[in-house]
Image (tube, rainbow, N blue to C red; front, side, top):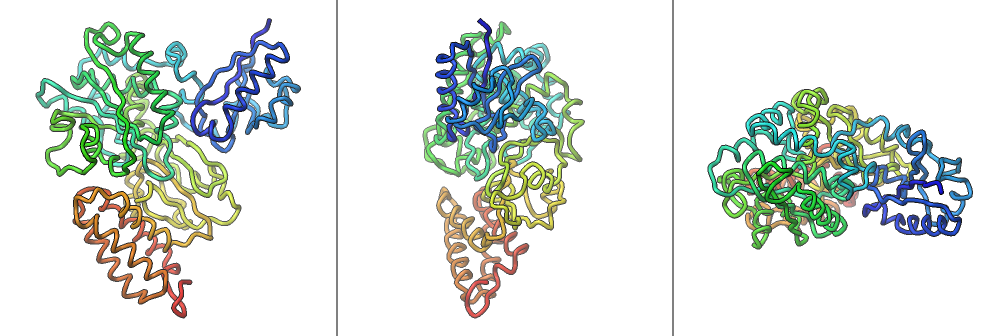
Length: 517
């Protein structure tokens, strides 16, 4: 009997729109029609607007169909989709879908292609090449390669990864740690989750390379509790890697030890800040620590600790496997390699877009994003999470890299881009930033704890048309205090969306006859 291979995503985004029902119906129809179908639950390709995306293996490669509903499955079988048959939902060869084909996937090279929990599939697509190469190199050579690649922290800070690793390597201690910050709490961001659910072994490989390089024998992945599917997938992947001899006391017969455990967060946004995360891992209240000392010198339980974001660590295996020069040929200026952008909000085609640094904002939101879902004209985009700047459409020619965004009064952050149409009230959006900070502040420093509350009150008065000019002046003074006086980025960056909204959307902050225009 001929065997047909069908792929249906099992990540939480795809499951939320019915992927499990589609998978179950495919198995039912195959059994009813006496067809031998092997169903593989892969991760999403990141084209969330096409989910559930069903793919089938053919002699010419994979062919895609989507978005597929439970009720579409019988007609797919009638059209012989399992062998690439034509259907109204047919998208043709997956690799030729323009939205995917025009991307430059490095960190996400395997996501949506492999079975997330098959080491054999992982290795067949280049997995463990970087780790094996790192084992054969000296520690300083690994860090030299990482530094030469130009890899910077993808969590938002943009700090060179090689410098952080070298600091931990050179700090004497009988115990060191690798901490992966997977507390992806920014609005409009989901790349960490999709990678953990769709290609967990890449993250484990990156952490193992980091551990062996700096002399750490233990790694911790701090995952937000709102990601139960990611946690389950990672836990299963860790067990598989241990059984394979990749994690444990003798990593790939190297004679060196490294193991990984999962620590779940408890719903605090501020634990995305690295020192608050360390406090939470240690079982304490998630409160920001004062610096110095830096975590690279005194981190988890007072020991030298490498703290990197999911995407940073997941980029390491490819850099080691292909070489620093291959990675650094992408990008512009000091922003080298690729960035995983996430399109969300009022967008027609939301999802994951990985391209080299230097793509314009307009190419992302209008090209890949396809404009707004409502069909109304765009008004603003927020880049970098709830504490990122709001930019108008007149700035769509800006280059999406660290330095260009910084010079334009914004920040790249984790690469999240949230789109708003012309109906958005930017006073409300500015007030949301202050209210968000007031809700999520750890309360340790006064500018953040009280400033955000006062800021929300001032924006409420402005929205009511009360002494608009006077309250705007006080608000700007308050923003200055928060920026300069806050202990961490929580309070320090909250003024960014407020000030950018006031700067670029001044008319929303004007009043007429005592009412907001």
